[in-house]
Image 1 (cartoon, helix red, strand yellow):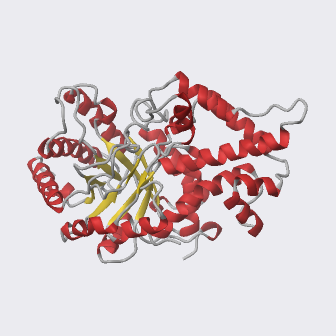
Image 2 (image 1 turned 90 degrees about the vertical axis):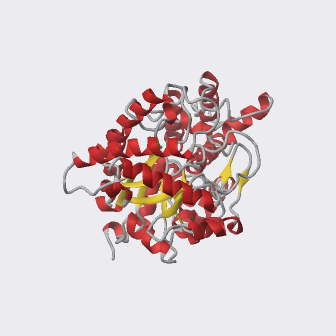
Length: 440
């Protein structure tokens, strides 16, 4: 079925995808976990090209009632996503807007009561803004919880509290609106990738899957949330997939064979976090093993950074010797912004000053994604695009710095405009995810 601009209209919703996946079909949904406007635009275009859902999620740190690091509240973020989708010709029911790691994480330095109160406000705001999927993450200890990890019962009770808020907010919405879907878990990878070098993470055991499901089910029932439990479609576990500053821990299907067998009969699947930088084969294997929801975030802004830095190199080659030319200083401005505010990368990177400088720019952890909204950095990106727009970019330079885009340029798939080249580079990441999820 063909829609606007030759797009394929999707006929599946997220729950259908889970059912199909559990039935053994190559079907999944990739969740774009980013608030970056260029990434959102690329995701919209990819959804149009493949007929996949436009599945976008914001974390509690990115988007919250105080603005988060993106500067957007849930209502503002939802408006941006729905506007971008509508402008491109996507139907509203082709959009899945989700909340990722929704819980006390941004406020874990506060007492649990205060952190949960703020998380409850965030849950309510997300549901009222039209979020249709919420991942509850209450796995992190708060300031008065003592040292060490929280036990499963405490995590489940706090998640059930947040779910109760979501249900109440849902009942106050338009009766025609669909009820939210939920994702739970206790063995949850840290948002944004691991902070230390370490070894490959341990895979969640089948026994832990059974315990998690039972304690969450009991916590939901105690709060009168049996109906909400029927809308739990995903369980977050650790499949041994992770990345840090310099290392990607690749998926090994042999390590998760027992996990797939541990899933209950009802239509619930695994949600895989931190799948960034996995190979195409690994992503497909995850979907085949019932990791029906694949989260991707830092890899997308990593690709954006690659494209911007490549264009800056092309800019220097083209305009560097021209008298009076005002070249952009994206790389330098980004470095200055990150040195002014070290809070987003300090505990993720290690080494001497040169090693830290390389990590700030090129790390898999991609902590520079927190600084693209900085006014100075934004101005330099705009200057870069302005300088290159309207000029014939030498094909040899595109081949040198953006070889994949050069191939698409030669085949007529991409225009020789800086914005098109950046979008193409981001979409290259999404191509792998769409294929793994059964959308080519």
